Image 1: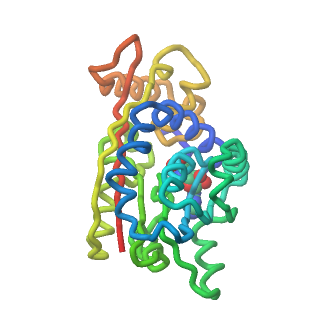
Image 2: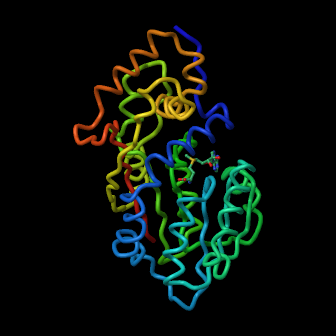
Length: 285
Ligand SMILES: C[S@@+](CC[C@H](N)C(=O)[O-])C[C@H]1O[C@@H](n2cnc3c(N)ncnc32)[C@H](O)[C@@H]1O
């Protein structure tokens, strides 16, 4: 069997592949509508904090900030003053987030940032001897894949959640295109998904509400020749760094065949779309 490197073991490759995946699945109308319409109406209203208060926000694994900026923009409509602590270990991502925030005067006006280039584990350790700071809204967007013990992380985050506050976790659903691909081939590392979070919450006996975000990924570039975009997407779909360079020809063509078999029938205009729904898990206190 070939020696494949899990994508998470190569930060640079991960960052590049994730950005491509994000652009082709989140930079789309369906996701923007979810954040701009569904989130404020169905989710944000469950945060029980007076609008005169400064909203204390914690972003965990914020990445380059595209998703969090969309959410902050909605929060600002309700809470004109926000203090946002961003915990992100990758400096290149923090720089991208800072550039993005600087381009958005509507954020600069109301949000003050505390940038922390560190993992959540380091943040936890560093703050344990300090007077406990609590947060009203904790964003855990597509980051639970990086923790061995999800229950421990959620329990810790809940301990620093203010009464009336909310943890919002976004996570791949159990049968999105990444799960369908990594689940089919034993060579690939499987990400945690909704069912792992549900198990952790059951263990902690915590109530939660789940909202489905229906999305598709434009995976056309995986099937047409050898483009950089196609290769980055293949890395993400297989959760493997440099998949094209390191996989055997037969594994590569088996994966392409598998991807063809899961292309959505509603694909149009010559595009090949894959299902990449995710779940929003809401935990309130
Ligand atoms: C899939 S990206 C998600 C980025 C962003 N939240 C989004 O949804 O667009 C995962 C992020 O988690 C960060 N990360 C990885 N391990 C982490 C850890 N132990 N603590 C905090 N963040 C971590 C990565 O650097 C990366 O920015």
